[in-house]
Image 1 (cartoon, rainbow, N blue to C red):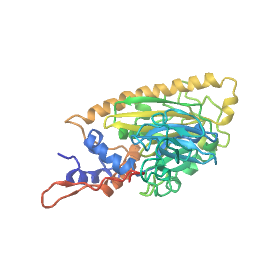
Image 2: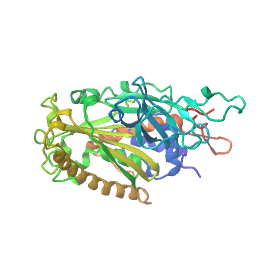
Image 3: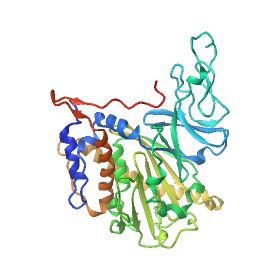
Image 4: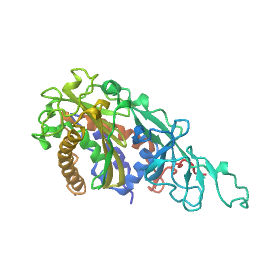
Length: 407
């Protein structure tokens, strides 16, 4: 029996109205494997997915591999300096061509030594000369669309997707003075099999309501009542963000509640009195503080588990600080306090979503971002919702979305 019913379709209405009267989304969309599969088809196969920082592959020939919507993907900087992304699955027998990251002039599948260049073009296929009608030009690694934004690499399985950058324009003024393209990322770490739905992660990241409640003491400098939603959200936007003011200048998410790293030098005084928290669904959570930016790349695995890659961005001058390594350790220790508190909360929220008593709760004004996120989701759900067969009452699903590279 499907969960994609007309009743569920109609139930979204109460979650996308004014925050003063809205209620939370139906619990089933956080727990159902069928619903996650629906999201994979309608969201993750069509939206821009963040896969990492361009600085991870600074030189021609550099590459890294990742998982996007369950697919093995290679992200490589070609001989011409252009960053491209393509499937990491060999066109012969489906073996994963390469793992990890590195630098090379070509990719060689270890199974039968098919070789591909840095654009995904098939260069060589041993002993295929007797195969009727075989033409190397017809067997490239399927390409994904690629766009760079503020130093992040985004990919899209829909190769004709509309550009991403115009849909993020409302947030641009809030990050312009960080000059994020040149910011330094010392590395990332990944938390695996975290036991909650990807949307629970997104909601928690941009939830101003819990700021100095769950995180009391360590986040008292950035209290819930100083949350603000500076621009009206519109349906063409792919970013949902809020600002959150401080009780003192140059706040920091650590035990001192003060910035530890060098402040980004072009920030205005107003910017030094706040953080921003932004969602770029369905994969990127991004935030700023006066001395750093931070990002969480979210990768759903099941309806109730995700992997999350976490990284920090600093002004290049930070690396010149003689105590940089020690300051980074102190800064990360502070972040880990938040991470552990949030992990406990989100795990218990996911547990609650499975309860027969799971609520359709009401929102505080400090949760305006949640209603905006609901709107982003629902307009996409509705665009692909399966229609009911009037004669049988059965659910008729739309045709499966074509995967890039399929014949």
